[in-house]
Length: 433
Image (cartoon, rainbow, N blue to C red; front, side, top):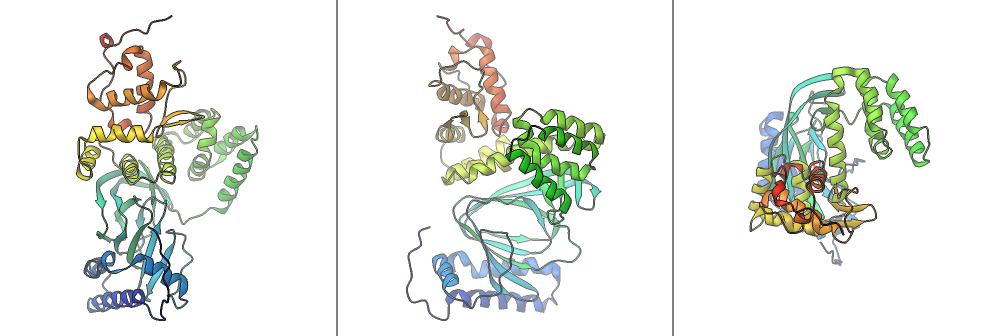
């Protein structure tokens, strides 16, 4: 979006009147229902659909209006959104506009209810259920996070919000900026905590802060930045003493640094030994934390909408069939051909190696560096299931191709792979000069 300077904004604003009218309409409808909390999501949904901000609000005008006029509703100090603007405030509810530049929301539930409307941009919206839940502490639960459905929210889409565990969801925003209008209550009594979910097995309360643990994590960050040789040993001593919840947060904070120095397995075994079967759900959760963090970080550097769409699918959709279906829904042509085109566009040659998103070309393969990108892409195409062994792969040993498959299978490409191995008879041994 390119902003063109506007001149002569008046003392009154069409933006102001639009949201005032919208807020008053919601208030009057809810009042007729005696402010029944269960009715609010439906009232907010209908009001947004009727007023349709995506068609009736000029985003550029709204931004300049907010920048140049002082008489705005009371603004919160919330860090949610990039930024969050309050467009209407009422003692019982308010209307907010959430801008998103490079953010993707955590998987979360709400302690409020209402509805949201996609005013600009589009998003991948994922809805989950958390089953077999058991509390470790009032602020930390273990269970099984199950993906229920994924949908593409185009500009103009409106979705209800219900408080509590019935509305566990996440949003991956595709365009920059994406803007949502939210009509929401302040809080719904008895529906907290507002858990954040770490798939596949953890729910935690992001509002609850153990100040001592926070400071300890910050001190560990100091040791990491200063390359302290005692870092892993100190973490090991902490893990041997800490309870389950605080031990988890220390491990979550340290996982990347420990992994980079080959110390993760040793520290994890200490945690596992201390907590036994209770620790089992955390192993896949930590693996998923690493994967999701890598993809989310890529979002801030990738601007192409198609590529962001693909990242969103890899981040949120577990089924190969569903990924292919959603690509077919949004793009013409064979979805596998589209994926291989994106792979070629996303492939990166860096100082640390050849990368296909979070999959690195195996360092142990003694291939000419100039050939590695072509070889890696050929392997990906084969393992995606095109059924053909390219001439490039025919020059490799079976073990070398297997290493490339392992690299892909240990990355976000894993759900898309179908071909388990390359038939031995179709691989010609490489000639040794």
